[in-house]
Image 1 (cartoon, rainbow, N blue to C red):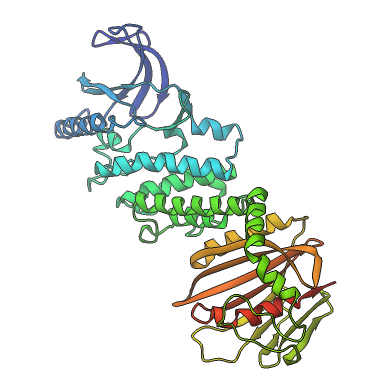
Image 2 (image 1 turned 120 degrees about the horizontal axis):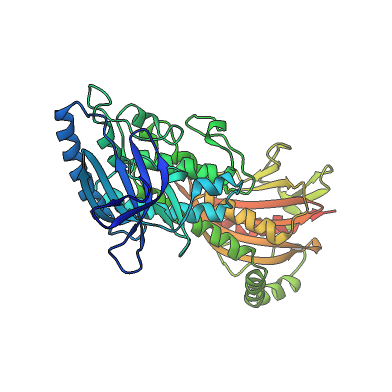
Length: 474
């Protein structure tokens, strides 16, 4: 077919792809100035001896051409320039997109970073949002149908599966046309029950391949895809896992839901980066130093045998003689806790939890201090630990809100810098508030957290501060 001219102005230049019932060509429109490139798709239906099938295919062709004209209004979907029939063969002429298909990127062994993967998803999801609003399901999302446009590096979505119906009108007697590519096609689509979130499954599988560099045939196919990517945020991994659930009812139900989840993820990551920024932390520390200077002066000049009151008049006062000593020789930790509080020695090396000190109460949520450790195989800075802890809070604590974050030094560990974060959120249905203090020494993080129902937080804060200030680490 090379050098053939269709309709007097689409001159075929070369073959781009050939399948059982379709062929794709690069062509030039010789009727236009500059002879711009275009793509010609030839569809060869399986019905040469079936007049009724021909009529069905012609009707489908016209219908899907109108859909493609409509979809071409989106900047990241090729415009349909023309459609026509000659000799019982159907032709689509589409805009040529200069770029590389993602399958070529993957073949080169490139792997995406998390940032690249998120950007990819957001880019394609916005295209799909438009497509689904037009009541169209793509049905064949895969690396070969996604082009990274040279002009602006945006992703362009090509080769809508609905057009393939035309070549398969005689595929089965039930009239069910199965379009898609094995590995990217979910089970409901294989069974002829395609859903809008079937596209979400295919997109998730494409993203996983881009992140891992692993061909889909090497990935286990189950509701929770098992894949290890060290630099992937657990929250992002959870989003991908939900995109590719085997049961479509357990997947994201719409593109909008996925975009919202990604927006929340980005907000969480950006918040983590803010707290990890040394300049931001230094500014917060300077501000807190100015604010807390009068309180610090009162601490230094107060009698040693009593707890120093903060600016909150509601806080309880306990004398120093009311405390007992807790020691953990394995970690060289000493800390004082009130005699009226319960001590629970835990020493769980798996979770890192060493002990809990709790006030006997009928409160809706425990009033307690939790002492724990976290071991790192590599050196970690206080700033890095702060980023990790804050990210963990914002990801896994319901309705988390950070109130304060500042650098400090503990009274009995003056040579080691520490960091304080005050935050609130929900523990089941109870609103709680917490004050966490952590420091790093010899690849080991040490964390103590005061937790109380939000209504009781201020009442016992002074006692909690006394326990924290008694903390000794040798």
